[in-house]
Length: 496
Image (cartoon, rainbow, N blue to C red; front, side, top):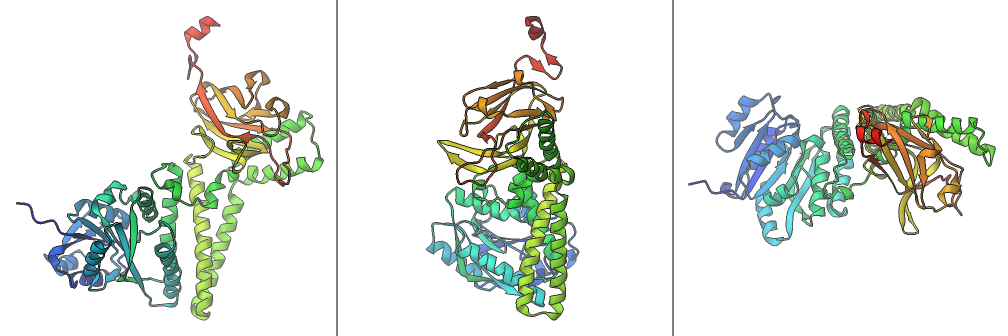
């Protein structure tokens, strides 16, 4: 006969324990609730050094699960697969629960049957000036999430959830680090599951107050965020995520795209094409020359300098400044650090060809020279600048590239757009212009990846300060039948 399933499975990853794991464990075995109501699962990573002490202290009162995983989100996810409880209780090994936590959770579950899960209250433990500033910063963010934000309510310090809903929403995903908490919270909200806040159930959270650890934690979150955006997964709830500026603006610093836009500009000018005003040509040259030559280097260098300066000021103030000054510069340092880490992560993704464009179609890998999405005359589209470039990926060989472009400024045949593929002008005979689209017959290289750039006269809207080019709804690719990596098939050759 199988043992009775407990109500709660307390899952404690022993990564980042900050020397507090014994206090955490003692807090759990000192609960006022009957011990038959919950099981304690300690999930041990490979580098945990106090294994003998753990066995001696825990004894038969807890379950110890060993795994080769090294991240505490992965340890939590692994612990969930071993849990028997109807409710999963995720916490951290540097968090100590008050004795009545389980009793209060049972009461909350009875009182709020509509709650699929809930987070408890985090109470900071501080031991130096930096930890006080760190706690103030994170506690403000936690309080905002728990009481004001519409869905960001998963707090891994102390999160209780129905087991079935947790698995329905995909669970915690180690590959996205601590960003996985936001993904799980968004998934709950998107699927209509409500997460509550049990303020009276209190956990004491140990803040370490070390700049190196802060940097490590923010990098973990940012790497997960950028990795998720780079994979363009579009899970339920992904539409709720706020897209950071560094990500939405990522292709504007793509050196290869900028070079193609600049080449189009130079060849257009050398061919004697007219410019309405000389300053428009100079503006276009200034717009593309720097990113074509330097890519994202200026932005990353500036962000690195800002983060280094903020860290230096913060380190000094930790010894000689006021508490208010330390708190102010703590926020500045973390903001500068996150910007730097985002830019660095995006740079690595771009180098490894891991970026996606996301708004112009599945065949567009990157894009530069576009304004924000807008709607007009029944169309949802993006204005390009007078010069723009997109990296497209299709099948090697002959493809039809169709640019859906509603004629919002003039009939397309009157606009006078010139197209360039990998720097070479597209033969006008290979371009078919319809009422609302350009169809370009192009030969893509063996990799299937090429850069398409265009240039057209500047268009200025009424009361609009922007420099506009083409209105673009989408860019689609379709390989022509009979073509392959080696060229046209025998049937096509015979027909020709």
